[in-house]
Length: 139
Image 1 (tube, rainbow, N blue to C red):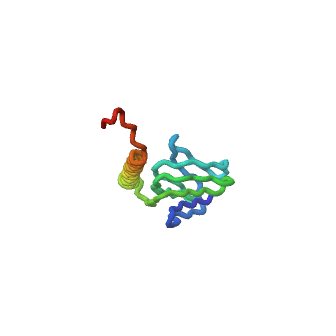
Image 2 (tube, rainbow, N blue to C red):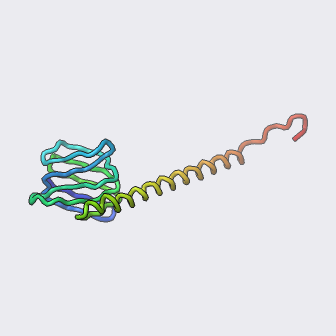
Image 3 (tube, helix red, strand yellow):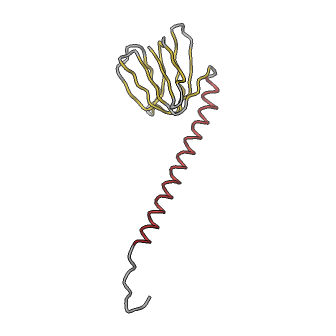
């Protein structure tokens, strides 16, 4: 199988002789062999592992993304970030921890942004809302 892993800025991995690929989505780990049915899934922050024709194992940490299998001969992965490496332990500890921290920071930023947006809408609503009528001339 052919494997291509890319980010918005670069092609990180191009491998032509992949015999087995292991990946992980929200439901857990799964494997792909040549001849696999067409498949599309959203990847979790995880490490993808594959073996080439010589039996050598390769790894790349991905920050989520989309994995697509086409005609059992091509696997394409699109991800925000990918870090290839031979040290599986380092990828699983340091790199994935950094990816998870960035995900948490982005989530917090989205929540803060949404709060600011809602506060702005409330302020606009209060500013544009007509004043209630005075009862008996008293305020």
